[in-house]
Image 1 (cartoon, rainbow, N blue to C red):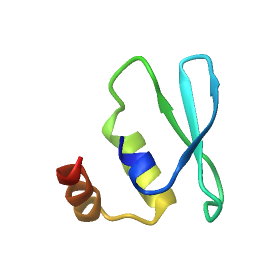
Image 2: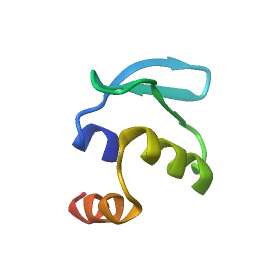
Image 3: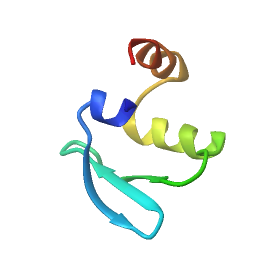
Image 4: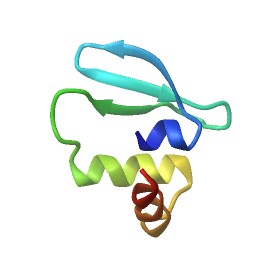
Length: 63
């Protein structure tokens, strides 16, 4: 999974949401576990991580 590849760890699960964190992040990364993640959520999480879309796509190629 992308988040584990970049050093995020699963902090907790609340309902159908997975909450990931990393020491240098100001806020957690939240995704849904049971359905596709909408594009706007991916973009918001990339902004939190400090990743561009191009960097994200390059990481996905490695998975």
